[in-house]
Every structure is written in structure tokens, then in C-alpha cells.
Length: 444
Image 1 (cartoon, rainbow, N blue to C red):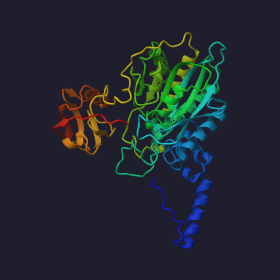
Image 2: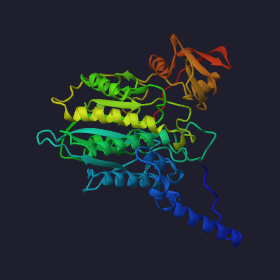
Image 3: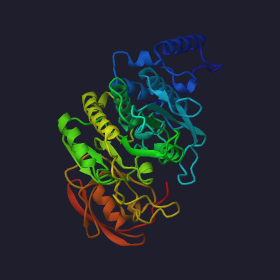
Image 4: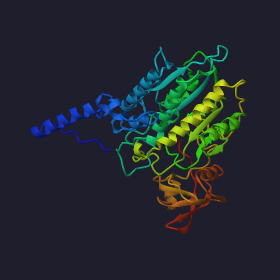
């Protein structure tokens, strides 16, 4: 929602100034004062009646945290809440200087949209019981930043300045991670240690996970696996998506057992790379999994609110992650790494290599029967120049049929900048073909 106009101006009527003052006092009492005012909201007042994992979603996706932009006051309040929850669950601090926090620079030469200043990963340890294995760790993580008031990355350009609460992306992942921590902390200890991390800066280019993977805070250099939860709040009656099952020989059997126990159907992918924090670990030869309940029409929009989250579905995902984590943390021997599961990110300065040409379309993420629905196109992009527009459904590019977003990505990867191709669309139910000259993918 938009911020209210500040009425404390010298010309405002006295009665209005008094009313505004009383409203502010009431907001403080209810824990609803925006974090930008320098006061974190009262978590208990906001989460009353909720338990993990939904309690975390309810707080992190509240307007008072103003969208949790990396490095912002709202994200700092979110980090404080996560650290306090780790402490309440009995997990040891595993950040810097015996705290739960690992500070890192948010500026990025690879992503010009990254925020300046300093961010914080929130890190906690559940120590393993086996003296010979406790220095080996399983990392369970989720990012806790989002887009603030829209930031680069918003898919709602017609709603500038509106808070993007990011309930599914990724308060749901954080809540599920905390629920897994709660269950593990209350049960028998695992042989290996488990490290829980809430990452900052994911939306700015995986900044927090990259920093953590390169500056591990524990006296160990053995990460045996990383399990990432990003957008796990919309399971409903659909399939859970689990990526990364080809990054270790044993993943499929471990995952299948957890799914069968939970009674959840899933679509499995071997891909170890993707636009989320697990990539930072697989590039360093750590087997990974990424759990995901699919895209939807609220993705990166102000409408991604806590009321739309499937709490029962999150509990199922938490049970699956709990079983997978327990199995890997107790397994003898450890997982067997499999390299080459997918296409790694392009090196710095080579944004177009490996990721194909640039079209400039903006996916809508609303499911359609076939193809990719577009919410719009970037001004001046090849798509814009060709006459592609919001509402179109892209069903083919060049010689490729496009059944879904992955098909669109594959088609673009198969072409190079400068190629002239036919783009096949559905517009208002009618077939349309346009010619487009593909461009160079823009960094960031």
C-alpha cells in the first residue's frame, strides 16, 4: 500500500495534527509503525494467533516492514525477528563475533541495480552429535529480502511506489526454514551439523548466498549439501517442484522417500543452476536442491500478500525438507556429487553467452494452457519494436514451439543477437506472427 502523506506540516490544522499524533501512538501500540520510522514492529502483536511457519510469513509480509528491500530498515527488522526466533528455538549463533549476523556489502559490479550499503545474512547452527561428522554441515536456506516499494524487478510498472510484501517470495521460504529448524531442534540430534541461513540480497543478484558460500562462518570447509526454499507458499492441489536432483547420485532416492511419506506429488528436475540461492553453492561443487511451488500472477507484484499463502501446504513442504535434511545429515557415507547438471551462469562480462539473445518481453506468470503470457515489454526492446505487447501469449520463436517459460528460455538460448526470427503469438484468441530482430541481453 502507499505511504500516507505526512500531515505534520506547519500549515496543518491543530486538530488534524493531534489526530495524526494519536494515530501514530495507536500504530506503535499495535506494532504497525513502518520500520523506516526507526522502530521495529511488535512481532507478537502482528503474529498473535499464528504459529510457525505462518507466523513468520505474517510478520515478514506486513506493510510495516515495507517490502524488506535489501539493506533497508524493514529488512533489518526482519533479520532481527529471524535471529530472535533462532535464539528462541535454541540454535547457536553462527555469524560473526558470536552473533547471528554476517555483514556484507550490497553494492555489486555484476548487478547495477543492487542496493548500496551493507546487508546481513542471518546464520544459526544446530550442532551434530557425531564427533567425527559434526564438522560436516548441511545448509538449509531461504532469502528474506524482497523488492521494497517496487525496486528494479517489479512486474507492476503501473503501480510505482507501492509496497511489494513478498509473502510467497520469499517470506514463505523463511517461515518454512524456521519450521524445519523448530522440528530438528526439538528432536534427537543428527550426526552432522545443520546450518540455517536467511540470505539477504537475493533479489539483487544472489549477493548474500554468494558471500556466505565464499566466506563460510564456521570452522569447517565441508558443506555436504544445500537445500534452498524459494517460493513454497502456494502448493494447494498442485505439484511441488524440486530442482537439483541430478546434482548428487543419491538425491532421487532420498527425495522420493520424503515425498512418499508426505503424500505429496512432485515434478523433479535435475537442473542444479537457477535464479535462486542454491546456484551459489552448486558452482562450488555442493549438491543442491531447490524447492518451489511454481509461479503465479502475484509474482513480483504488490498483490503477493500473506492472505494468499497456503499454510497447510507450507507444513507439508517443511515435513519434506525435515526428512531430506535428516536423511542427509545422518547418511554414511555422504552424498556423491554429480557435476554438470545444467548450464552454469554466464561469467561476468559475458551476459549474452550461454543465455542466448534478448527479446525484452516481461512474463505475466499467470498459468495458461500453452505458451507464455506476457504482462508487457521493455520500452525500446526488440519485442517493443516488433509490436509485441502485454496480454499476448508467446507460443513459438523461430523453429521452436514454446510450451512454457523453460521453452521460451531454451528458444532464446538457441539464437544469437542480430538473428531475425518469427515470433508466433496468440492475441485475443487469434494467431499472429511478427518478425523480430533479437538483441543483446542486458546485464542485471
